[in-house]
Each structure stands twice: as structure tokens, then as C-alpha cells.
Image (tube, rainbow, N blue to C red; front, side, top):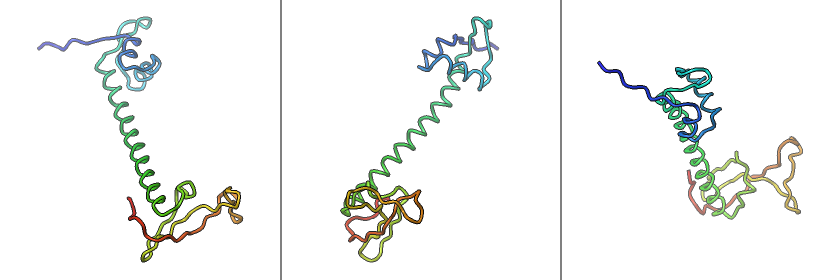
Length: 143
């Protein structure tokens, strides 16, 4: 039986191939326990191990990008919903409450003073004051 031939490359070549810093390649080799070849001075690595490490991390980055994209899309849908009801999305806290009662939406928003500044909650000075606003039904819940 013929063994497959190893494809070896040094740290700089792998870094160039995957467009990462040489330190990143050395980190992957350490964490993923790549088999070292060559001498300490002229270290070489198996390209199959390098590819496996890259794929593992690249898949995680792609998942994170998908999550970020989904969060941005969700935020945009919520902003459209809020604007459709005549409210400013900047006045709506991220953890707002909303309730449909008959033909009206009850939406929580931040309170602003006459100058347009946010008002602190006197009961909890670490948070801004909130109020419930009732607006007529103009659009369905987007999510």
C-alpha cells in the first residue's frame, strides 16, 4: 500500500496561503497540536493540518457573521415598525415592551425633556425614565 505524500510548508507560506499573520499560524499549530517537521530553526507543517485548523475557525467566523447579519436585519424590521407608528426608533430602548390591545399598540419609550435630552429615572439613577405610549394599529408586528 502506498502512503500519501505529505505536503509540507513553512510558517510564512501557510500564513500567506490563508492570509493570516505568521503568529496566528504558530498559535494554530500549538493549540491544534500539529505535527512538527524539519528543525526548530526551519519548522515546516503539514498542509492538511493547517487546512483543518483554518476550516474550523473560518466556519465559526461565518456563523458569527450570519448571526450579526440576522441581528441587523431584525433591528431594521423593528425600526420600520416603530416609524410606521409615528415614533422615533432612537427613543425606543433595546429591551422595550410592546402589547397589542384591541386596535392599539402600547409601546415603551424613553422620556425626553423639552430640550430633547433623556430624563434619568429618579427611582434608579443608572437608567433613563420610560413611559408607555399608546398608538393606533398601523402595521403588524414584524417578527
